[in-house]
Image (cartoon, rainbow, N blue to C red; front, side):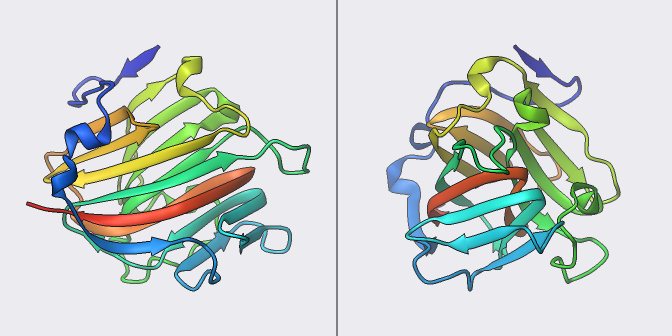
Length: 229
């Protein structure tokens, strides 16, 4: 079941990202990380630094956290672009293995400061940012939600799923695709468009962050490419 929030224009379909953005328009590689040379391009904010593990391990970013954690790409992105990566919620009996919260921030900025990276990983600390957010399998894998944060504490729910097909499966490797293109931002899972939002006041630049809380996850093959005009 999908819930639409009135007053917001959102489109949902089963189109693939490549059908929406033809391969001829996917251009210059802006950034790529195969997680074999450490985490020099990433900034970690964790609520429990002593017990949180964030590491580059044999070609994957591994996050094993008892509380909230955000792993920010340290490069501000602008213009039209597409982000792709693979991600898995690990369920193997570990102490933080919990099927929940395959989340992300993008186009994030702090209206009050040039320094975005000064928070402690607690979710509410990000309420003052301007950004887009998807929480896939949040609330202990009962909701998948899309929000826009307005930088003043307002973060309206734009849309959500509660049906099983749009929640998480244990140990499944998902391909996550995020598109920012001429005022429209879209979120795809395995080629299926979950959310598409034509923003009348679009966010034009900002940072991307991998977000979760009390979870054990892996990220692979992270890539950002320009979309040609």
